[in-house]
View 1 (cartoon, rainbow, N blue to C red):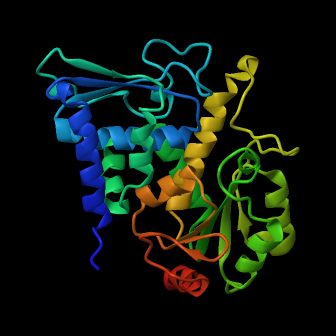
View 2 (view 1 turned 90 degrees about the vertical axis):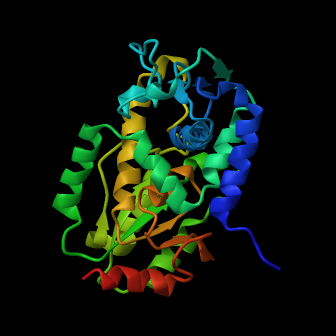
View 3 (view 1 turned 45 degrees about the vertical axis):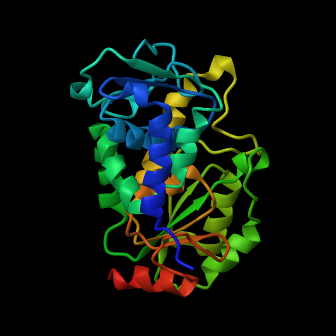
Length: 301
C-alpha cells in the first residue's frame, strides 16, 4: 500500500482550507491570536501562510491579546516584538475582500496544519516569517561563545507545562539515562522551563552542560502562563523561548520532548537529526536511534 508524502498531504489539507476561505483570493486574511504558547501560535501562522500562498492573498496578524502582550502593545500587536513584520505579502492585495479569522476553534485548524508540516516545506514558510535581526545576532553571539569546537546535542525538556497539557511528562531519570549512553565527548545545550531538570543535568554531566541564564520554574508552576498583572513578563519569556529554539536548531543533533518549541527548531534546520524522548524515532527525521544521534554529533568534529 502506497502512502502519500507529507508535503503533498500538507498541500491537500491547505487546499481544503483555501477552498473554505476562497473569498480572500487576491484580498487579505486577518488572523487573530488565541490563548496558547508562542510556538503554538507560530505553527498557526505557518499554516496560515501556506493557505495565503495558495490564495495569493496578503496575511495580517492582529495579535493584541494573550500572554505576550505588554502595556505598550498597540494596534499592530505583540508579534512585532519578535518578528520583522505582522503584515505578509501586502503587494498581493488586489481586492478589498478581507476575511477575518477570529480566535475560535475553526482558526485552530491552521495550527493543526502548521504542526503537521513536512520539515522542508515548513522551512520554506519559516524563512517568510523573518525573526528580528537583534534576536538572530544575540543567538549568534551565544553560539560563538559556547558552541565552537565541540560535538553538541541540543536537549529540550519541557517540564512544567506538561502538568496541564496533552503530552506525557518524561521522568528525569528516564531522560538522563538516555543521555548517559552517549559518548563522553558530547556536550549538551539544555533548553528547559524547569530548574530542577537543569540541576539534574548539571549534577549528572557537569561541565558538559551548556545553558542560557533565564527564568525557570522552581515550584512546578508553568512559566508561560501569566496572571493579568504580570502580562509584561510575556515579552521576556517569549524572547527566551525564541532564543532557545534558534540555538537548538544550531546544534549538531536534537533530543527533545513533545513540544512546539523544539518542533520549530526542526523547521528552522530541517536537516538536524532528531530523537523524541525517550527512544521514539522522530517522524520524518533523518535518524532512528540514540546511536545515530551520537554519530551525527561526533561527525561534526
